[in-house]
Length: 123
Image (cartoon, rainbow, N blue to C red; front, side, top):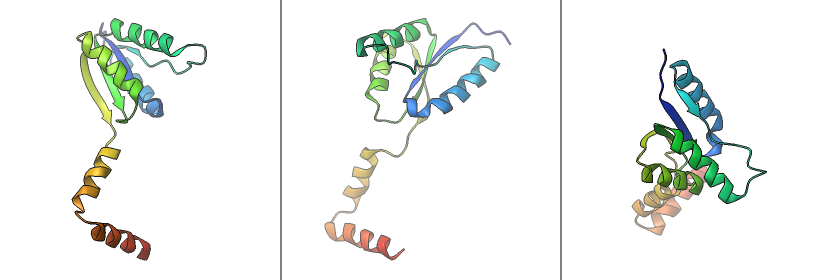
């Protein structure tokens, strides 16, 4: 299948293996895929942003793998949005600090919290 569409994959580098596997699947379907640059040792922070901007500008769509913490991914998402790119969320980490805070809030009291801790000690 010959597809002229270009996909830029952005995301938290901790998901690089997932991103590479996903890129391989897209390439099999005929897409051109730009993965994030992983070796930034020779670049300043500004140069890294410019490199990512180039990849995003060349893309028809931006596909995202995000841990909900990476500020670099947030920055890249902002650039993608500002450029009017179609954004597809491929992977979104579900375990976040925000969820932890909601779970703690749901306990309603310190006693409930201590009960959970004591039950955990018994396991």
